[in-house]
Length: 216
Image 1 (cartoon, rainbow, N blue to C red):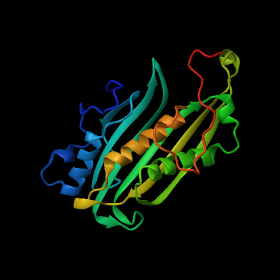
Image 2 (cartoon, one colour):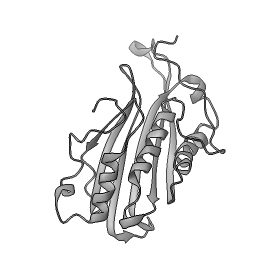
Image 3 (cartoon, rainbow, N blue to C red):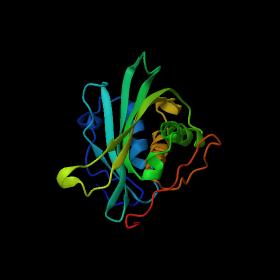
């Protein structure tokens, strides 16, 4: 991945079609918005090959929140575009995401964890004044316990958020993808246990922050 400098590398193409002149102008503008977004330090992010069958046009990127040599959280964001519109989206664009992280025991035990994690996504979008619709998703908490030759490892809990939403289109028919990417990275940082940098919605709740990698 690119160096964690708060800006994403264009060292790889997310989709071959993005280089074709036949690509719709709104999609080109949306992809350009992703490429030009400036992000907070500590995020490593790169374009990757997107799924080929979800929409006529797609662009994808993957990211990780990095502290030293440790990845605190990782995820993928996919931009989909169907010029003809999509009944389920109620629009021509859709953002689809998967983010995941391993949690500290005190965070994993919180009974409100799923609701809080979902509020991080909606709160990050609303804190930036972004208009969106048809948001849906799941928050999954999975615990692992180790036995036999792995018995010395402490139990671990991973949280996974799968979500999608329709970004409202702006001038020129393209949504403000730079702002949506910034909001998504804020979600990634919060699930990693970092303090938010954008003003939070009053309804957004914070969980205990993650301890450093060398904390006993």
